[in-house]
Length: 361
Image (cartoon, rainbow, N blue to C red; front, top):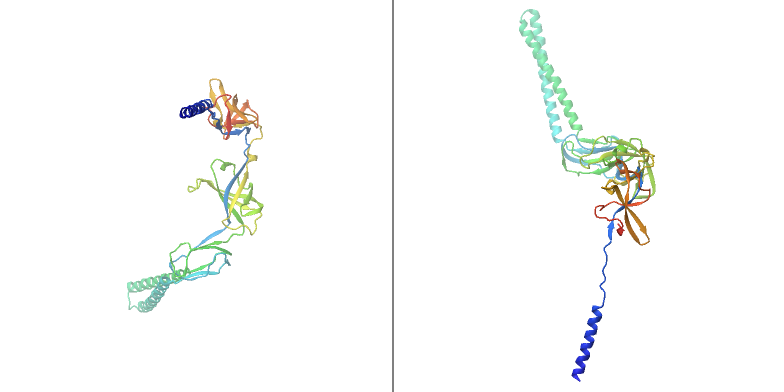
């Protein structure tokens, strides 16, 4: 009985081995992904959009012209101010000391001038009577002249020190809204230190940077379209008001300013904006086909591209001879061999084969 059982197990095992060896191994063929692009006309990419930031057309950085400790600060973000309104004040200790010293110097100079004048009058009287020499009279005149010049100089010094005291008061230079405050009361500040920002403009504008590749197509007074991600219900019109002639070294772009033609109160300073340019008028109207330069290959038979043929679920590339024209900023002009709307491979030309099955990427 044990022998029969073992024979049965061997038969079953052999059957399993035969069935396993009979299974076919599935192999998956690799389908190469390719990047592609549709054949279009020269100047087809006319619409370009760049990001910018909204701000008023006049922004003033507020600062004192003297140093000191802030004793009064009437500035808050969003605060509306009028021209001439007092915004902040310094203790002005040093300026007041200098003013008092200048007053003392002026009083001393005035006393010296009066003394020199009395001496001059006395010497003149003696000279007229013959009791004083000409040299004594000339010396008295020179002394009075020097004392008078010293007094006039001290008067100017007093005026300057008065002006220094006025530098310790910060007044609003124009009507506007306080956009930022960067100091606090009791803080020591220096001349020219930024303490706040005043939005004093009446018009809103967009500031943005344009790359070198398209800056020559951006012209002053051209119209653009502006949209804001935070204002979804409408778009705005704009006019290019300023195009910088030199590149900004910090961004490697050319600064451009755009005035918003139809602003609303919903546009706030600092909002991100999308500015759309239409460069179509700067392009030629001639219907010339163009393809990227890197999509054109060359061999002993001439120039060629890989045309993409889609047949149901199967996609293949076909080697297509082309005749090229001039090389433009958008690529090679195509004189013959292609039609608008056809798809061509734009990468891996050296490894593609005529008739190869691919998948679009």
